[in-house]
Image (cartoon, rainbow, N blue to C red; front, side):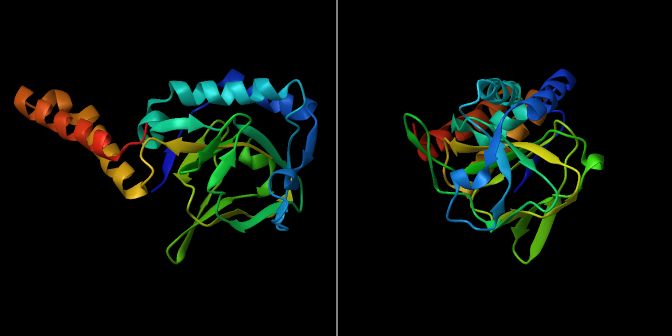
Length: 221
């Protein structure tokens, strides 16, 4: 299951990230996955003083997004990383690493997220293509739009034919590791948000008891 979040980033945040994308130093993307020879992209140098600002802008957007919080149920979120694709660059088919090593802790990746930064009309190709069964679903979002999807899915970034693709990516360790269980709780949360106030008090309370007990049963703390 995918979640598309429109307008995750504000206009000023998009403008600032685009400007930083021009200013900051980028390194070969293989630094974070040297074994994958199909990874041909650039990622922001995490030693660049401006890196922290790019990461914080996107992290703040996640924190204020009810859609993101409800869908991903984040326990930990890896620092978002700005990535750039020039003509000819791509990231071949892969599933994201199960364990992400952060500076002070290792985290499990349950959910992945791509936040689109620049205007899709300014580059050709570069779609995020996710394999679901025998179908491939391609995404090329508007500036500030995010796609959230299970880290277990096979996916790729198809080659950029012209222009420049700028995105921010991150990985989330969810309170509920199992995708099926997480979606059940998400759906119940959405029903409660949409219909809760229309229910009589007894039904609303019973629904909340089920939601909380499933979280208690399935979540890791």
